[in-house]
Length: 391
Image (cartoon, rainbow, N blue to C red):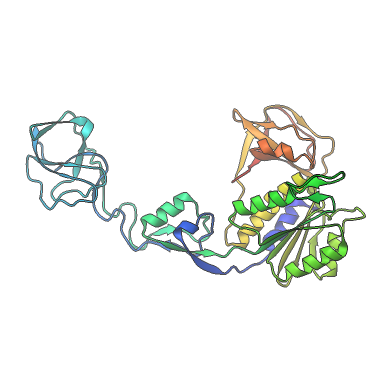
């Protein structure tokens, strides 16, 4: 059994050279940018009004101004402003020649074509040409995960397609003769397959749809057949179940038989101790414990960062350090433990949690509290670390 930190270092050393492809902007959500996106335009492309109001010359100290026209966003005024003149202007409209200030509507009173200002200070209320972006400026950096803000920035810079890293081909093999798909009749001795559903959802949240999700009974020949098939066709195979020390835990032996080099077979973490990781010429294989909380947590802590690195993204969990809202204790402290928690009033609140089979405890969890090996208790108001879920 190796320490969690050592297992994470082994995963960090794994090498992968991702291919790239171009996708339309409306299909880029969740993908990883390949190469910097550099602007070839100025933003704004002209001096423009930052507020609704009246465009004037800031040096004109007239007491009232004749309104000579109106400029809406998208329009252009070719008429230069002269002394004692103003043009009504809307947010986003180009500044008329001769003007360099917008006096906002709230400080203005227009009567019979003349406008007076109740207040006028040095604020220009103008977005200057090129103040946000200039040709050659980097809009987005290589390795960024593309979200709504990044899509908006790319669109504002005029990009309608983005080069992104290809997603790895991932196959999920859920082992266990006792599992049946949700929706089927639950016979005696059977349980519904939640692991296939949770792994699929976690992959899709990363914009990595699985190639296949396959249920395999506890049969070493069937497991070997499916694993052999998919290690030749997928970049990553994730197996759930069959990795521990029971009579029907065949996965590690099958992996060895197929020539997969096992990098670790047990990790000092709770839940998730019997996690297996191996590599072969064409890709990687993870064997996860069958208990659903173990499967979920191992994916979050190990597989998610690993897959992101395969796509060129240096994923880092968002970790908060907060005080405990109540005392927390455990009986054994040999492993690093992860506990589902909520954050209430800026404090950590551990959820009712019955162990690695209690998948329902995850439904209200906002994060996973990390309890280091060797630590038996965390007193109320003591500080602890929480990895936020969904980050």
